[in-house]
Image (cartoon, rainbow, N blue to C red):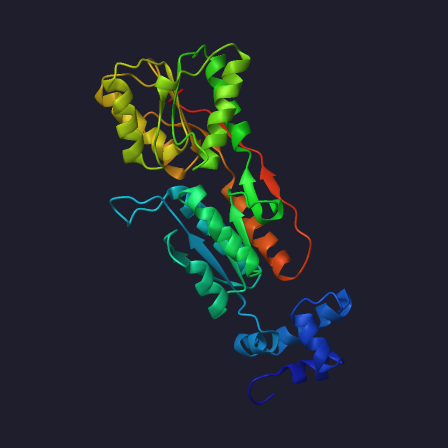
Length: 338
């Protein structure tokens, strides 16, 4: 052949119509498997490349998904929660597998990002990671629903739309942490994180932890609950505050690994041995958790499956298919800190 192969060339050699070629290359269910394979084989032999821009113009789609990332404000904005980095890697690979590009954007919860993406058609759908203050974020969800924007969320629950959420069983994860500590006779417990409706994932972890202790006739004292956002610095200062107020405990459950790592630093500075004096458990199983000293016991959220499910469910929504919510099972990873 001379020049660049076209879909008409594929149709000629495959013995089908050009419209059948277009459907086959889009993996349309209207084309049977035998025909689809024949079309793909001919396309491969002709070194045919799909003109993505032309295809997008015909379908009015961008073949792009947007990942909008929201994080708690920190002093150094170059720092990204390693948990979100792991999710980003999984989502990127899942998009590539489906033939989609991924647009990644860091957002402020106070901006009108939801209108920008709806009006500009820069992406066919949106994946939301993080949300800052959940109470402030809820009106954004309502706007997305009113605009019929195709979107899915990690962790956050959208009112009456469970199908839009992929999350971990945070309540069950909190129970796992308590069970582990109780099994090692650690009954004088503290909690660091945001135990309020402003952070529902942390709150669910706290409630699971507290309720499991209560089942064993152990009350988690309010004096031993310290507020913190998901940063090492916040965990460090929250733990120092407990120590400065002469609040004693022999176990500490942190709502995230970053909080736990900061807590371990504060305990060390106060000459409190981990795990001999205080056992510490985090949540997330970020990559650095196994390298801190002592290595961090944690509750794992499977970021690989989470990223895959977010992309899979969003594409189903874009195609108008039925989607179900997914609650991932957490797993206890025991290491040196407990």
